[in-house]
Image (cartoon, rainbow, N blue to C red; front, side, top):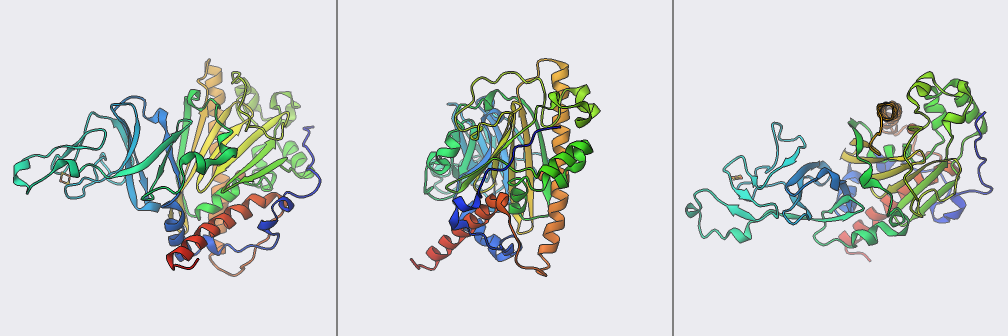
Length: 422
Ligand code: FES
Ligand SMILES: [Fe+2]
């Protein structure tokens, strides 16, 4: 039988008395007015992760990102000097979207030496300078130096590309990330080049999906059929509880113990796990990643399952004990919908068997994601009824309290400043 650790004595929530223990409201996830405030108070002010530097393998590589929540599209590019820069994806002539392929609203990526507008062929170099205007002498005193692309603040940390839409960001990216996230420095993200991505619009508020990944209370129930029934039953009976929760500024962490699936009794695994040497959770034969950074596995679990670092507002880095990692992004598209992006990162497989092991992890992840997102759409549809207005959170749902409190705090502060009240 697998060994599941017992919860620690006392309560996690008591370490964060400011979060309270009372019922909570989900008005912040069903109100169109609140969503508009979130856009202004949060998404237009904080650092947002839009991708990784491996998506820009050489000078001239670019990708676009559609960001409905801040009502723009951006193009992120590696310049001739190898720097990463971001621009609003709009031509300075008459406002055409500068970079797109067949579908104007679809994201794209590629390589170029210059950006050339499809409408009248104005051209910009990789630093965003306007360098060519056809029939330039027909314009009136055109000073090309004044009509470069509109820049977006952009900084890179550990290969993660962040942008900030404030006129002047209130904090540097490092100050915003803070010590808990910075303690991940040194994790071999860049060498995890074997990747799978999923993307889907989910008809639920963006915070509801974050909530689904910041507690494990639901796992033995909602995901029971993912494991042999004997395993799920054992997990449910012991009442699985993560051994470590932490809050640092606007960001959160939950860390869990794991299992060595290959050491379990055969009836606690699925036959496909044996064949693919993968499962609960990830490949069984991963290469040694070397020493991991100090911020990983804070409870020193052995075996260790995962650490889920939730970077405010909408980005998650999830590091698995079995030598791989995931990122999640939740891009709001309205008060009751968002685009979910999940990306899996593995070290390059050394053999076909390792590749198959990664593929099984990827499709298993998709199955988990579908189970979660179905439930979220069911939740959204009913909280919008407002038939019930107060909801209960238990001790291991402490991070949910924090996300909603933190969101409310940014909105409150924005509202206070907007009306000039100190
Ligand atoms: S709108 Fe881009 S060149 Fe005219
Ligand atoms: Fe889940």
